[in-house]
Each structure stands twice: as C-alpha cells, then as structure tokens.
Amino acid sequence: MANVDSPFGLKPTDHLLGLDWSSRTMRCNIAAADGTATYIGDPVIIAGSSDTAGMCPTVIRATLAATNRYSGVVTAFEPNPDNLSLLYRVASTLRYCQVVVDPFVIYEVQACSDSVLANTTVGLNGIMIATHSGSTTTGLSGLELDSGAGTAPAADATYQLLILGLVNRDDNDISAVNAKWRVLISLHSFTTTGGILGV
Image (cartoon, rainbow, N blue to C red; front, top):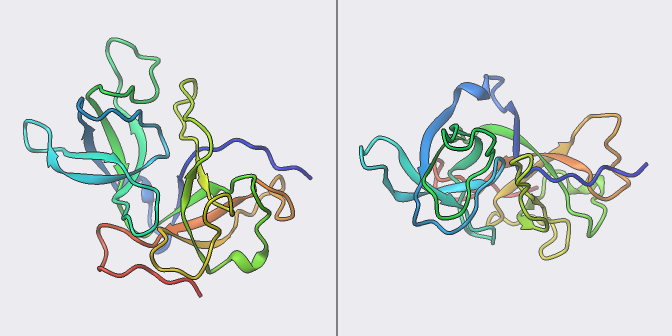
C-alpha cells in the first residue's frame, strides 16, 4: 500500500509523560527582518531577542543540519487582520505565533521518499530535510524526516530527532516510502547540553 505523500513538518500529538501538550505553547514573534517564510510545523530556535515590549521571544526557523538545536515547533499563527485567510508567515513580515516548547512533546513526521525505513530505525536519531516548499494554501510545513536523501537515520546524538516508532494507523505502511513516524526532539534548547543518543 502506498503512503500518501503529504508533508506537514513536525505535528505534536502526544507527551512522553502523559500530559496535555497543547497547554505548553509559548507566544513568540518572528521579526520583519527575517527573510525566511515560516509555516505550521516548522522547527524554530529562540534568536536572542524579543518584541519591543520584551514579552515575546523572537524565533527563527531552525537550521536543519546536525548539531543545531530546536527550541520548539510552530503550531499556529495569530490572525492577520489585513488577511484573515493567511495561514502561514510571509517572508519579511512581523508575525506572532504559538510555539510548543516542551522538550517532552512527541511529534509525528513524514519520512521523505528517498528510502523505506525499516523497523530497525526505531531508536536511531534523524534530521529534517526541506524536500518540499511549505504550503501557502494549508499553511503547513514542507519539511520531512530525512530517510537518506541527505543523511539517513543513525545512532548520532548530534541529530535533532529521536525516532520512537511508526505511527499506528491503518493507512501507514512501514514497507513503503513516506511513512509517518513518532519522534522526540533530542537536541532541544531547554534540556542539558548533550543530545539523546539513539540505541
């Protein structure tokens, strides 16, 4: 059975400690000086500044390569009163967003179409890859779990994601590309200096 190729970045679904992840978001801003369009599901990093009131941290989309930490994932953008249908952040515009920053949140992510990931992938570390552009229609990220197009999963603590298992759904086939996997951010800004090494 073919899996649907429909990337969405990182989608929070669960919590490692059994808590409600949805109450653990932080109001942040993306500054007008940032020239990268940002989408729901994009991982971000706190950029060392804030809005003019000093209340909302400024974030930028995180660098996807190994060793770069994530502070969280964009889950929503505040409405733009000039365009209420705009579901993503246009490049070089100020936009406020909600970011899930809890390091124990579990996410769903789609693997890219380069390779099929076997059950032995569970317990390894992975990185994200920009195989698709974000959708200006749905507002969703185009990022995916790299299955080998650039860097295949491995037991490497410098990779940002720890792969916990296949998403348990009838329409999710482990034997086909674009399978959906459950992951934890293992290289998180709000945890200790070392990453979580795969097994």
